Length: 277
Image (cartoon, rainbow, N blue to C red; front, side, top):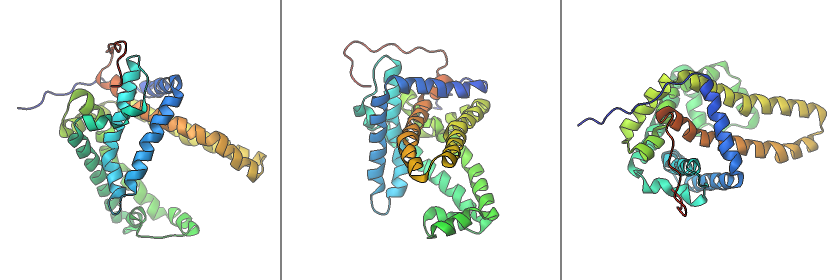
């Protein structure tokens, strides 16, 4: 018997910026709790990455499982609770096989996109991504300036878009709507394509806050300050800024999911004394 279609809402472009604003408001309310949860998330991925031979691939396979912990923390906060570190492994109590399948789908999709770049540059990008090509800093800079490699990177990025869109909301659909991996990937892709205006606005806003503003500030400071002072300022200001932005983007996965798949719905508040989700 076929599963019922997962419904979603189409939003205008401005909603993409609204997602970021709401996600930052959630982070700002529980800054320390979110930073601790975020560091636990990346520390776990770092440990997985150390596994010999398969670590680099296993990281991407288990990311959806760990991402569910961040989704659960945001879900609890929306219901009036606070995010906690113990929610990090919430995905292990969900449909872990579906989440792992989503991770494997992501790895395969990205591998195909990178492998296909060989059609453009004869395998240069593939060798760089796989680590088969060992380059010095100057050689790497020259390689990235190669127009053929740049075209291959653009080609791979375009091919990777369907994989990125299909996996964008898929973990949330598994944990909150009990969808199977295939249904979640399909629903995420359909909803993302339907909300392409909001997603483009979101990506542009992320580009402004994550690239344009930091680069403009660093360029200005590099002119005004000596190198030593600039390095200290980067450590004291830009590092915390990057952490805040990264955590906000992860919370935004939940905010955008709720807005697209549960528009207008209000969650019941947690009962007094209720623990983590």
